[in-house]
Image 1 (spheres, helix red, strand yellow):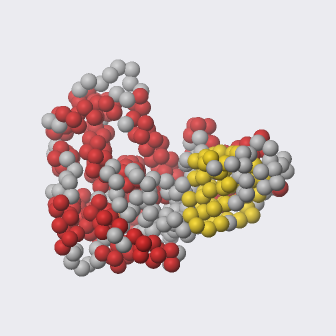
Image 2 (cartoon, chains in turn red, purple; image 1 turned 90 degrees about the vertical axis):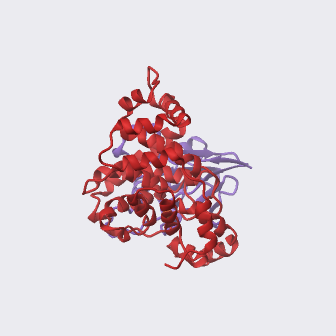
Image 3 (tube, helix red, strand yellow; image 1 turned 30 degrees about the vertical axis):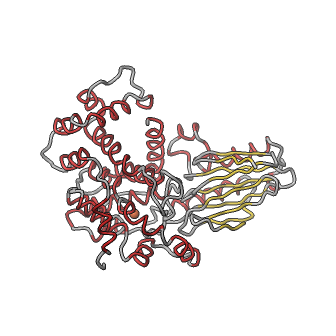
Length: 284
Length: 162
Ligand SMILES: [Fe+2]
């Protein structure tokens, strides 16, 4: 692909970071040799994050009869994976809940879509043929669309022209081509650059950069890239909580090489994601 | 005009002329619209999946989520609001069911939803008078009780009627 134009590059470097705690946590969870004590230690150093997590765990949707007061108790009750997911959700939410020009048909849909993608990855992880890091797959789902934070403002300036183009060609089925036509780049490439700038682990940079083209990920990261790709599709199927680009991306049918999934399992995942999403909405 | 918004798996019926029923961004879900234009009763259910057997608890909480529980319920509810008791005199329209093209036949939930809905309608002695289903875009749909007109729009705001 062509070089990204200078004003988009500048915008990548000016994007507010997802929190330092999130970056540390993601790097720790990506390391096979870490322990849950490492996870707790990073969260504990972030007082506001700790408070947010304890608030969620003690909300009605978790149905506890005795309050959880410390992260050490929380990790016993939730398990490390769920504690990590709550922390990433809280940190990423503060960036992804901001209004997103151009893509969002209503406020909050970028965050809703990202959360559903992460949740779908959580449910798809056990179906992946080779062993993968489920927390990294979840994070890949949450962060897949971050490139839109950068390019949304640039597309917004040409909204009318773009809408005309879309309405002229009803069979148009690849929004990335549209982004490239109007900007010379797409939200995958820009998201990948942003992930490198945020110093995320390489597996995540690859997942984000290739979430619509998982076959282009490096071989060692393909399973993770396919799971994020498929999770994004699951999140789009629900229609609601998606942007104007909903369903206008092709599916890579080679997912069958990496994920064992039948249509009845897919229906189950659609349902579980909807239920989890409703639970999260009611807990915050 | 008072607008009733139907969420995923929800349904609504109305016989109040100044009301409309609307559901946003259908994705692979299908809005089943059933109305009696003479008695001025309209209903809509936002169906997400074909069969309730995958989660019967969910089906009892949210019967509209599944085609097999949602449609018979909607038919009963429009009749309770004063629509004709003859199924064949009720008008049915189907909207949504966007399709993800998948040669492995796993992601075709939109098409499976449409097939399940048609099968249930057939059992009830009904059939859709108009449909706007399939393709790869998400639809928003609204029915106005007074005119029983069904208006669809896409994400960029383009509108059409079926
Ligand atoms: Fe994307």
